[in-house]
Length: 119
Image 1 (tube, rainbow, N blue to C red):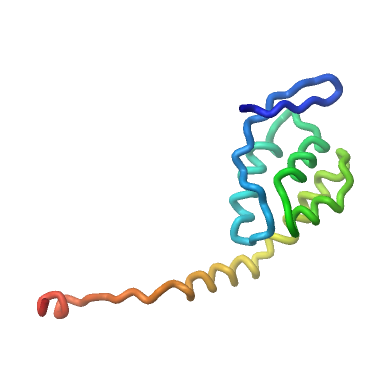
Image 2: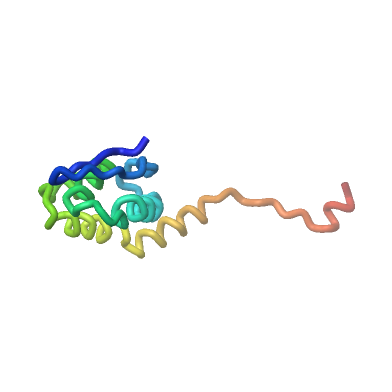
């Protein structure tokens, strides 16, 4: 069900938010960023203050604390969004996390043709 947002006596229908609430995980940031951008940032009729309101609603924990540092106003949406990007688009941390994930995968046993023939 679409969410209604009103500003200056204008009522807008915003698509239902399919984004998960973002807490702090570097691994979840790209999916959250892309979905939030598609639903809210690219919405042509939302004010920056409305976008910041949605960003506050969709973040919690460490990420929510970053957003909460910015008072609800048109001027502060870009500041809050850039603060999240600065924190979670750290390429070194993202690459390190991917390497850790790859190294923690279980070993795979490979059967060669000789082993298969003996069975």
